[in-house]
Length: 299
Length: 256
Image 1 (cartoon, rainbow over the protein chains, first blue to last red):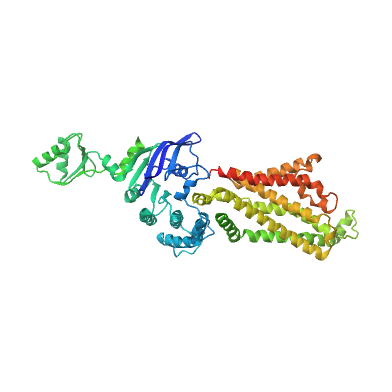
Image 2 (image 1 turned 60 degrees about the horizontal axis):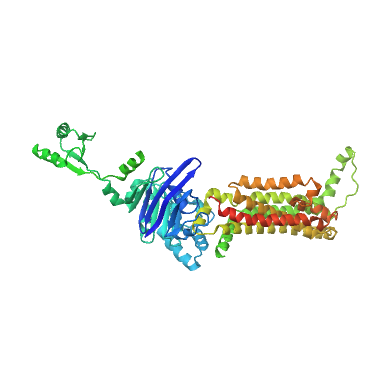
């Protein structure tokens, strides 16, 4: 089942068209990485899903139910963590979770049990100070705790790791990975290493619509172009290869690059064998998310 | 219902922990004490200034003060208290818009009308408590020093004063759902009051305008009677009800 389905979403601010017919499908049980550069429209998309922004046109369904702007009933399925979560700073963490529990209509015993469980998950169980004194990382962790409080079926996190140091980032990613069994996670980011670390599915947001979408593994296979790298033991051998095959290029580190379209790799291997060239490495290169991302942006 | 209670509790906690309540209570206690104090001190003040006044040709004869002088002060200080109150409370919504704290509550399924209702209840209750506290203090001192009995239609006149506060609260809630910033809210309330003052120059209109309710002095001196205030009272009540009701659909459509 699809946890979130967006079809033909349009949104403009003034004369700037941010979303141009965006389509997106988030399957249930996935950790979905929503990638795009700053200003691409990630936050706009998420806020529209939450009914905080009114779409110009398009349909959004959460757990099969249509999203309505304003009084958004579908929000009961969603836990949301904004990019900079702001809490009532005069409360402490457990008071805030109790407040959240009360406004969602949970009973006291459930609030108490769930709060302590979540505060432990995010490592704030011993934090008695008011939120006023929390660091960014602590606020993000409390943000995840509040988002998970009423066991949402979809957890939406807007750039949860962008403003954090490496330790804070790792903590957040570990938490997201840990909650995967409980909920579907949709998180936006421009940090590609985070995506490669935890995501099962990704979508790349280009010029107002999705350029690439699917399982991370499928995308990597699908975009695998037949490119190879060769590293020879001696520099002179690499020069011989370069001179013989016009399609081979040599970079600064002496690594040779070529693609199947210019020369069949068996042909080159045969040449290497014939000349007794000693090689350190020959590799078919996997596309990195970064190369895909750059490709999408350049388009 | 339980989430309304939860939001009200949050509002009250915020008022207590931010120290807002303490400051407002102190202000209204001071205002309550000031009214009889000024009345009590007037003869003494005039006496000490008698020499200076004599030089400019004025002679001070025996000055007698009564509860009426204290009540005159009460109605004179009322706008001051109201302005202080509104300055403290007008950012109730805009503060949350700017910090984004409402976003989390609303995405957790809190109904938007609950936010408006809870804030309206808390702010009007707080106004009522502070107003009647200030009134109580003045009343008690007046009863001790003089006799409150000489003030005519006293209860009616102070109810009018209280209602003008509720009117300002209703406007604050209404403009908070329309405007995004605190400045917008204050300008909205200010505009309505200024308009009401300007229009009150026209005698025919004056009896309908909310600001007429601030004129408690004519009532206690018996220069006018409660029925002269009926039109203004009804119009004010109508604006209060309409403002509160209208703010809910507006807030429902507000982009946060």
